[in-house]
Image (tube, rainbow, N blue to C red; front, side):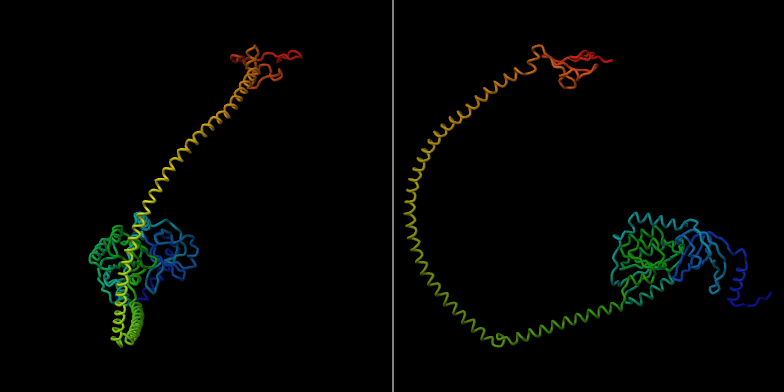
Length: 471
């Protein structure tokens, strides 16, 4: 059977009409994990819904997504309701989502968060361990996939911004189960070759596509490298474990190159500015040097050097004559000083003998006077001692007599003295009883005698008006 040839658009349009006419694909509900989520300024959401075996592109227009009550992120497990159709301009099947409800968090996202938390606690993300990026690197390593868009972007950006640098490529897989060990191998090889900075870049993709950059061994490798690493993995919203460990993270491969190298035009402008400043400074110093040279050339010393020598010779002769005159005068004064010193020495010798005689006589008189004053002081001290004793003993004897009299009187009037004659003191709760009205029948009292205390209980009492008993 012969078949006619049709344009692509005809086939795609047929598929779209076929799907749109199938009632099973209208209002269908599916469950999966959100991946590759984008939220542009238009307000529409673009993402994929996936499970372990398949993935389906989805669009949720702003009129529908504004009704979503939770913050939607990559890795969220959700239930979607919508229509399955075909996007004709790209020939791609997609789902127009009309409603979304949370269904849990995806396994990959949970694994990513657990690894992030573990490495953060171990200090792999600390800024203190970040290595400084050289300002003008001339030896750069590029670790990325071979013949990829990310590689082309990096090469174009580097050639445009900093073509003077040498770039060394270390191609490796950047997607798939075996990509992480190959990336580690490429990074270690680049680190051993002594480059100034390493660029680790990859284009955008879903969470699964970028999963090789969430490997724990890769994170520890980046941390241990001696060379600073700049990552540019995925798009601005994509964050991988490699980004957190790297010394600097850029949002795209192009951004990684821009962060690693300066703009050569800006460097040229800066160098031109420095050159102008340097030339201005040199010209200013040359001008000052020429002016100083001109002043030196017009100086009298250089115009007539013999004149300067003649003036110095005249001054030297004058100083020589003055020195000779001073030497002769000094000799004369030295002889005069010797005579004066001899006369002073004789005078001092005579005065010394006279002073010694005066000192001996003064010492004798002083000793005699001190002995006389000591005898007088001892006599005065004896007299004062006797007077002091008399003045103390008389009042003391009087006080002792008065104290004895007071003690005898106190003893005569003491209640204890009265007790010795047959009397006693009745007390209740520490107070002496003076009336029968102060006690009641069955009260406990104490009776103080001359040689001790007895305790009693009141069973009856009688006052001057008669007996009072407890009824």
